[in-house]
Image (cartoon, rainbow, N blue to C red; front, side, top):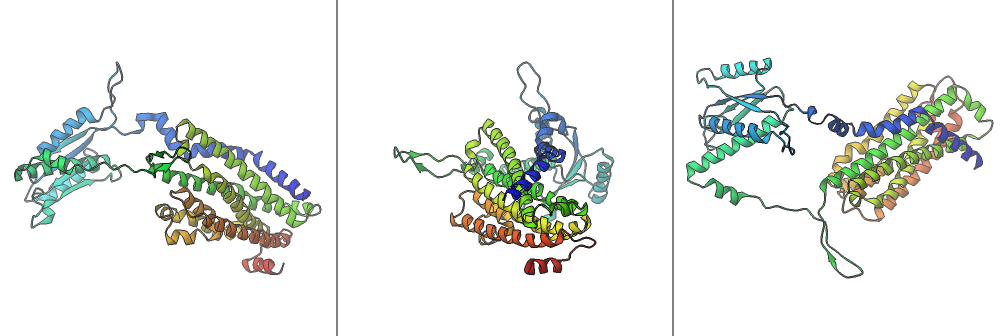
Length: 444
């Protein structure tokens, strides 16, 4: 046991004292929050507030005037922030400058082509074609009752959304007027009721008083499990990943032959794994402490699932041991880095599986598919933790069974990796294939 501890301490100190580890610890939060940092640093300069010129081809002849008036109102008020005391309002959004283009019934496509050329040349941002029968949804020619938006910047949504909303408001207002209905009364009648999403009521066990339900933050409910999963995935790759490089270097540089004179292969391997568990715990402690401090400063600490921290630590330790053992075994069986990368490709695909299933599990954490997949040991740490983090949670027996399965798989991986490591660490010249490794696992 003493030799295992000595190897573990050596591996731990070698990892945490390296420049790469320190840089990773410092840069990872910066990279993950770079979008928020850039927004704070650059502020409004990160937004494009240049004028957006839009041509309108109004075949109906009834929409353009009201649309142009709405654009003028928006440009005068809606695109500016509230002025600070003694200051001037600041522009936050681009102006929409509309231009009327007369339709040409004899050559409609020529008009649209000319406008397309102007968009390509940069003198227009987009153009809109309003159908002749847009006010008559029961038109015999549906194509004449549509509005078409043309642009070569499909990812910019501000213009499209504003035009879609405003044109529909104008069309509905004209239809109300033509039908003799009062638009304001119809709008009030169609005003949707506000629906608050709340948790459940509870009763104080001491006083018997019923406490009112609190509003549920859907964003927090989704973001928290995603953050935990990303952190768990990052810890696995940061702590377990370097093991294969460490083993390969010691093997190729003949350091392994010296070490085997002092410690047997299994204790050597276990020391490496325990050392990496210590590294992973260090990373988790630093990041979780930082996250809790930020949550406390923003007043959302009570919204975080604190009861999951213990489960997170258990899943993280078992995942590092399970994947780390496989990495150690692969590193010992390979003769160079290229062979190791090829051998690790199937394992990396397996590690990525829970990330591919994450959206479905978050959407329906208690579905049959999510439940069954979360009991598959290689992906249990990620998916079971995700299901536990999403209200209302899962039955208490499921994480216990999941941890038991992962623990059994971890023991099996460590045992198999120990056999591969014992034989492969001294092999030189050629790497072992999958058949060789299976033979070593079964026969030793």
